[in-house]
Image 1 (cartoon, each protein chain N blue to C red):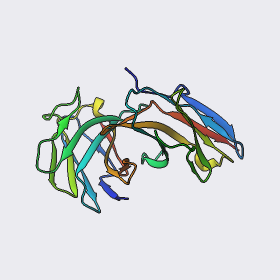
Image 2 (cartoon, one colour):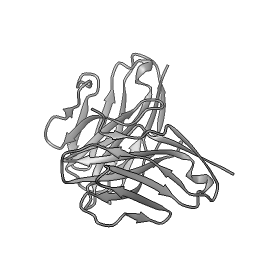
Image 3 (cartoon, rainbow over the protein chains, first blue to last red):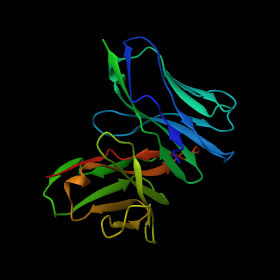
Length: 112
Length: 114
């Protein structure tokens, strides 16, 4: 069964605007971690932000914030003030036990 | 957090040949992971490599096709054997890092089989 679901294959956003990338997950383990990675066309995986299942506050890292709704099992990524360099694939991932599993990804395109 | 140097960054190979991908970590790590990312797809775990023991392969991946070495705590290789065009993918190595047990990735190897 799919554990990480990203329902948006592609998203467009105007430069300087905010965008939300959706991620839902499925687990029965009370302890897990949620991650977002950015993959530019070069192929490298760049860590953006982390949210632990016991964290009370939503994680923030600069222009990135994670909207964590535990009861809904969602962990949406919000990018504020989009820049052209934000155009990339974005992957949501969940660490459950020892394994890291990835969603299908969302391709974000920032328009000038 | 750990830094991983991965090489080659890209290669174009003839079908039927093999390619070995190397990952060097700047610190000792217990586990290393190898992922495949087929074109337009997400990352799929190939295997987990512990130093001093055989790698553990995920369903659909076999040692004969993807032999892995882990000679010490800072180094690992993945070989893609008897390649076919279907093996054209990005291959990434990674390791756990930090208190949150997130993963750090190598820069990836973009493989094209012709």
